[in-house]
Image 1 (cartoon, one colour):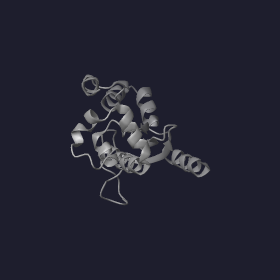
Image 2 (cartoon, helix red, strand yellow; image 1 turned 120 degrees about the vertical axis):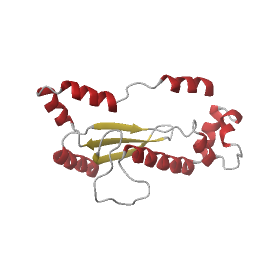
Image 3 (tube, one colour; image 1 turned 180 degrees about the horizontal axis):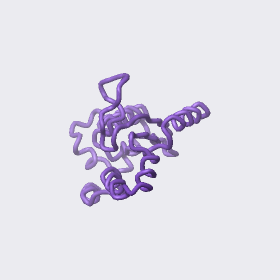
Length: 171
């Protein structure tokens, strides 16, 4: 913990406050691909949720923690690649990342934890080229409308209605 705190302090001194705080908490129990890792003998991946109840799927997941870990690692890497933080096929990069939906990520720090139910989740701080200091400066110098447009384009505070329709149909 102490080393992580020093690391965060160092990044904050260099880049200022983080632009975004992110928590990734994928549900292996609700994901057919994740369940495929837990139940490798099931032939119909899309029908796993129909054959097993939520409780049965949970028992399978908790009985195979290595599968949960593999799924979590791949899920997090995919999210980070989508955001433009890392590239899936590159082990290390020296140049700037490509711009993602949150802008160009210049630095990130993350910590993975285990919830009480043994489910992995990750907390991250992302620093982009558009920082809180830039937002403050824009608000002071009359760029409030541009700032609000940027926030509206990058921040989602609710789930789209299609998500809730999908959840109702699924469960």
